[in-house]
Image 1 (cartoon, rainbow, N blue to C red):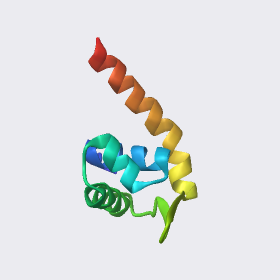
Image 2 (cartoon, rainbow, N blue to C red):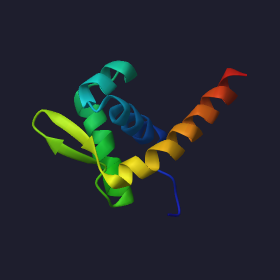
Image 3 (spheres, helix red, strand yellow):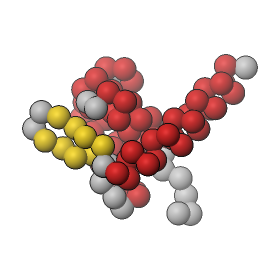
Image 4 (spheres, rainbow, N blue to C red):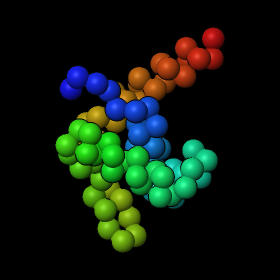
Length: 85
C-alpha cells in the first residue's frame, strides 16, 4: 500500500468492531449509522478485503479484521496519548 486510508475510516471501523454495531459506533462518534457503514465499506474497498460478516441483526469480525484490530488499537492509543500531552 502506497498510502494510508483516511483516519475517519479507521476510527469508524475500530468503534464498530468494538461495539459490533454500526449504530452504537455512530452514537459514540457523533455520526449517522449510514456514515459509519459507508466509512467501513470504503475501508474494505481500500484494503480489498471484507472486515465484517453482516447479517440483518448483527455484525461479526472477519479473520482479517480480528488480525488488524490489536495493532490498530495500539496505534490509535499512541495517537491519543500524544495529543493529550
